[in-house]
Length: 558
Image 1 (cartoon, rainbow, N blue to C red):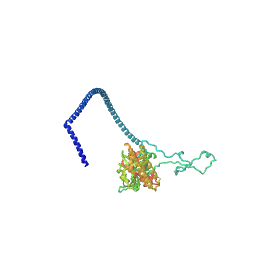
Image 2 (image 1 turned 90 degrees about the vertical axis):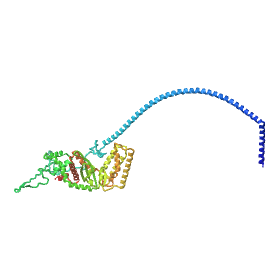
Image 3 (image 1 turned 180 degrees about the horizontal axis):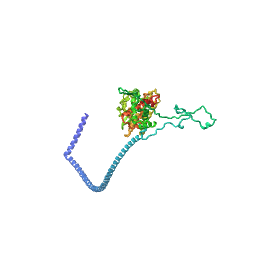
Image 4 (image 1 turned 60 degrees about the vertical axis):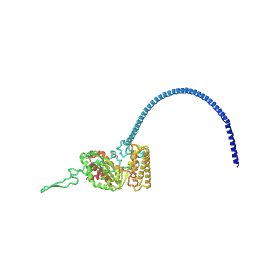
């Protein structure tokens, strides 16, 4: 209700206001007021426009002045900029020239540096190569009987074998209290010679003869030429014309025949003592006052005769080697008619020995020897051919010790070679210290094997850190070999019958080497084979107890 009243009242006020405004428009006052206000606003705007025009004109004048000033400043700046630009361009051209010159000098210097680097690289390469060659040559020069398989006679610089005995300060010769090794008295071959007493004893009756007699002997030798002459009467059959005589003893075929003692003397002198044919003949001729002058052909044929007569004995030795649980074998070079050949030796630890001559190495050298059919343990140097034969193999540790010493001398930066050499010496010393019937303990063997593997691991690390030199790889190859053939290096620890070295075969081959130096070269494989067969028998004869070698050989030729 109240709301309607208020609304109607508001409408009435608005209507009244609208009526008043209408009256004003009708009367013209409103138009006049609006015109007056409009004129007033127009005049105010015109004044404002004039004022703005004045400000605009002033602003234009200021802008023109500022533009003139700016152009002057710009021209001055431009002139200054052009001056500086010209100076900069001039300096840039100078710097460009200097840069080009510097670049040319730099390129020339770089070319020189590159050339010098190439020269340095070439020099360093040659230096490394020469160092390697020097190392290789030094290793070859330093090789002797202690660090290689060469004998002391084959080395370039022969070293004196030092005496390891300690000095006692005593005088040389027999020491007080020692019984001594007196010369053996011989049976007199004639009547004793009674020496006449001194003249003063005969003239002075105060000297009386005692029961003591001093006996001294003078021993000489004399070669007696013993000649047995056989006579056989010839009988003639008058009916048949047949002629017959008594049968001569065996060996008596020519008018003059030489017995077993003369043949044995010449045989041993030429083959065992390694004297030449001429010296052997001349020595016998001098002993017999030039009565015996044996021909060179006869002396040279003694080896063949001895070999033919001892064939059965060598077959027994051959069978004995096959039945031996351990056998040594080795090869050495020979010269036959100016060409290279090889002499093989097979020997058992108890001394049974056979020599063989072969024209080639490898499996051809094994054919016809006990090694071909052998089923026991072979002791040899590192010759892979022998690994195809036998049931087990023991490599010679004496060679390993020498090669390790060579590595120590030529690779001083390594430590594995010193440790390995010490370990092998310790193992050999331990094994030699046991009784012949005593075996190595499993714990000790396990300890040795563990140390062996640890040293090989050390060698692997050292060669990975510092690779082996291209000119000296013996040490690295030895490490690989010891890693691959570990079982064959330590086999002697498991069986007391197996020796650690192949020294037995090495010593036996020296007999042939001595003959080779004296003979220089053999004429044929057949003559060399006969000599090898004779060497085999000489070794076996020396093993026989209470045997006189000269008598034994004399019986063979007799």
